[in-house]
Length: 148
Length: 373
Image 1 (cartoon, each protein chain N blue to C red):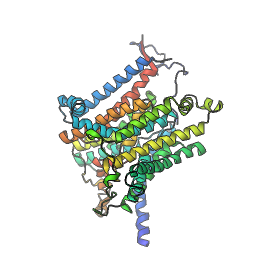
Image 2 (cartoon, chains in turn yellow, red):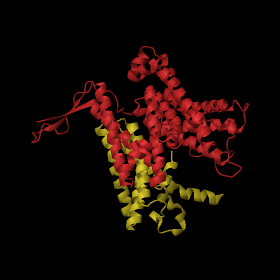
Image 3 (cartoon, one colour):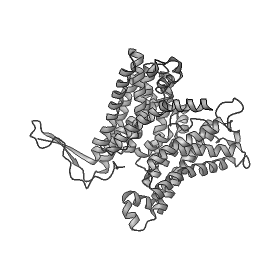
Image 4 (cartoon, rainbow over the protein chains, first blue to last red):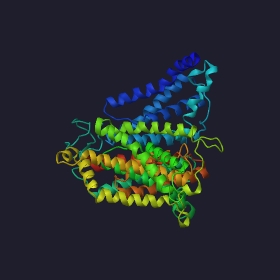
């Protein structure tokens, strides 16, 4: 029982981080009055680009993280142009962006053979925890369709 | 939420941020159009669809599909080939239903993003009836449809009541209830409904009596359901008193309340009908395509429904037409996947590109661009 509680508490932060980051991003958007439903799609873009950078350049996690953030920000620029400049309905634009990102990441991932690749990620220092690290590779693979 | 589509005709004409500085090459002036002619509107949107298709074709070419094959795959291959045409009609039925579901909810200004969840609950309801063998074999399909409707409608009632009673945004609640519904589905499929034959997380196969029968020419009878619902929705929105209320509520919400239209009841009824149609989509997928409850039969249909409803301007007959075109896209996508190993998600990409182009083109409908010196 104590083991269970210990591992539960220990694994909570790593599960919480994606939620925290996504929520913070959406809060910024919400503060400017734009309802942002694109988080799922932008997370896919970030995951794909990070894995792509690591796979193709063999770099560490930091450049991959920066590239992922830049790519997702650029993608978000499409959403910003739609909602802010063209005043498109925010719900429609958000849902369309999710579809756009799902399709685009799946296409790019398959074409460049970045899917189902194991990357060291941020946990390269502790190989015993490796079962979690393929998750980032998985999220940009063809399994994107499994999400709602 | 600030509404991006609110009528802008009362806004003062907007000048570009260029300001009043003298410019060498003149400047672009953006004016609000007082009224757009219907013809202009249609032409702009058709142009937008063409631009979207062009972009998609370009991307497909980059992905390795020969440009000459594109026309073949998308037009001739699907519409003229009997087998593919059957596949299109097969795919069209659930797409028509989800499109109608979304369109109907939009009519009452209710953003039903929870079509996925309502489809899941619909599938669960139908499966519950089938697995517990309620009623005679002959009438079980009807009972399954009813089971689907009861479950899915109840699911759509939750966000409707949350919004009407507590003022909770339906966009958030319907979206999040999708995940709850998905967890319920997994709980059932990994638990009591796990198939004892192969021990995989999907329900046992339905007996033949519980499957939607095929019509002559091997067309799924799900299409009949879809056409029937289309006619019904067209009648409700076009001719009935409820349809009149919906138009009033979506055009002038505060005035509708002031002149005594039962806004709460009308919105509730509309959302319940929307949930009912979404659950029927779940039913035809489970009983018509999969033959059992699976983990992913609903995937992609919810958002597709919202996009179809948007492209069709919430008009039921237009939604049915757009849904058939989407089905052409789906089948072409399947063929492309087989022949050129382009991932199936390409369909979503094309859908998204077309919707983004059409949504963006509305700016040109609502505004006039002029270059002044």
